[in-house]
Amino acid sequence: MKEEEKSIRVGVEEEFHIVDVGTRRLAARADLLLEALPEASFAQELQRSTVESNSRPWTRLEELARDLCELRGRLIRQADEVGLGISAAGSSPLVEMAEVKVSPEPRYEQMLNDYQQLTREQLICGTHVHAEVPDPDVAVAVAHRLTPWLPPLLALSASSPYWDGEDTGYASFRSLVWQRWPTAGPIAKYESAAEYEEMIKELIRSGVITDPGMLYFDIRPSQHVPTVELRICDSCPRVQEIVLIAGVFRALVARELEAVRQGVERDVHLEAVRAATWQAARSGLEGELIDPVGGLPRPAPVVVRRMLEGLRPQLEEAGDWELVSELAEEVLATGSSAQRQRRAFARRGRLADVVDLLLHETRACEWDRPAGDPPAYRSAS
Image (cartoon, rainbow, N blue to C red; front, side, top):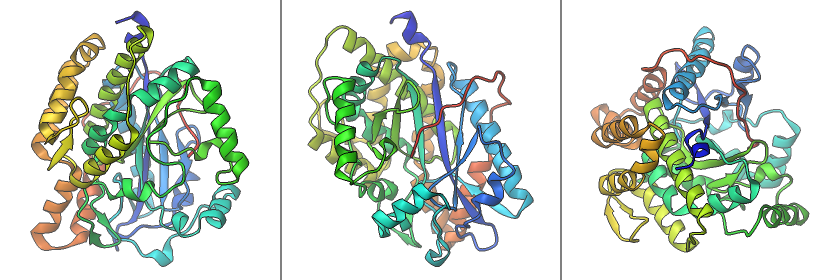
């Protein structure tokens, strides 16, 4: 692997639900938290019941983990002061739709006017991972080439089995809600960054979207920082799952960067990717996934382990193999967040217990305070 690949930095954007700790329902109080938090690290989202944090870019996964824990701790401490809870999950089990409100910003108010119910029901949170790819043409190529590997990453993050008080039967119902946007899904192949930008201009001219930030592909070249951005994943209650996904994603990017340099072609059939994504959303880690290599269904643990073995050279070169493989085995042993939520519900049949589990897992963190202060990554959403 080239020296520049060793130093690929990764940064993470996390979206969090704000919860009333008394009712365990979503609370539209982001403004109350954001007024006391630094703008460089925390941002408003579409819904007033959501807050976004933005990590700094890091080379070492341990430093990324510490940064994420520090951001979570700061947000949770502020929420504690005003009687609110913070939950990192793709969806929140308990919602009172009459209390849901769009953030008071012209862009979001225009989205409500344009997309109506789709905007009102955007009660979901995701984890976005950025990996540095400075060359725009290469970033466009890598984003498309990575699409077959996105379903296993979605399965690792699956944390949205409940929607509006009901078990949906899916591990990641958030991903189905997200797919309703007109620009959601896997990214097509573009021959250059110029061709990709022309596509964006065409969509804006059509009036269906108003700005480049509304390109909601599962993975995309960032419009604001020199990265490829993974967007398919649910928000993860445990930081361990985020670090695992970030390490795997960086290794995938490193492998494709080398393949692009060597002129290795990739044939990607987007129909197959969409089918595999649906399967990952349906069963998460508890059923079968479509193996990106052979296109056949296999037990999810088999697909995850085969993916890691295929990435072992890149993971070892980055110094990530031991940590990533250990985290993967931990996740496979404990099950997806969706499975843990269902186990919590099964004990007493109370969705409040599910919310309490998410609040507890979001608060828990095993890494220390980070050092250094590079700039934060943030993208439009």
